[in-house]
Image (tube, rainbow, N blue to C red):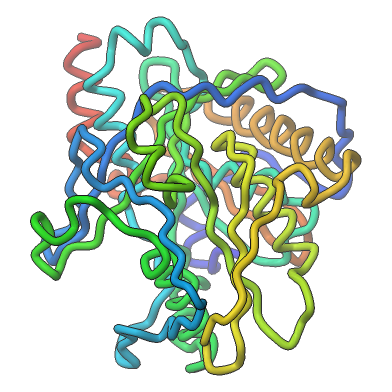
Length: 350
């Protein structure tokens, strides 16, 4: 949770006890694909590109024998939150007319929505900021002091595990423009933009799409492409865990994906076995209902607290106590929504 110093700077508004939430049977209507964008990370930060240049396709080696520690730097701590998720706001500014056809209460990324879906089963803490701008609540994940400390002090084995999970997705996919466009220092990501309705909430959200299932999919319109989610689990387990199943199902559901590409790592982070799973088989109907209903209740909670326009709120989830606390932020430096978005919105409002 927040430190005592941080608490003094906040005004506590309300608390949600996740264990006591009454879960209704709500329907997740969507996602509908609205568009996409590319993102390139280099030494100067993340760059938004309104095209499909970073899209990747699955290209499995035969036979499978992949060292996922390729490129690993033991002097780097992996796992920090990267701000590129808020690049969806660039897409929003470029698609005002489409936004009118798909009104939304929230703008968020799929990773954060996944966290909300799994609050009943999550033991880790997380923090988010929330700002209402022209009636839409923009949510952004915050790297808390606790998370920074955990990453700074994580063991070598955990650091390698974090790195290889990301690196696997690069090693078994290809990009048509990689050789001619990449400087060697840039990392690319491809994002889909979606619209989903759950209960009374309409959500515009963006998710990182790991790749399409084959090169032939690239010839289709974006709305018809079949994307896959690439995930790993570690030996000596014979299969993945309940937490992994839940996480994978949630991320796949939010992006409208049907297939998980699953790789088994040995103790040296070598992959020799890769298979495919149908998303619907990952968990049962009761858990699916719980995940969707939890998301609905957390959004209800956020909406009741984030009432003032252009004010920054913070929400802290305690994984041990299973409680979500809403704050109003005090300092002007606490708003993590990019100024290039808020400034445009505020100007257009006046």
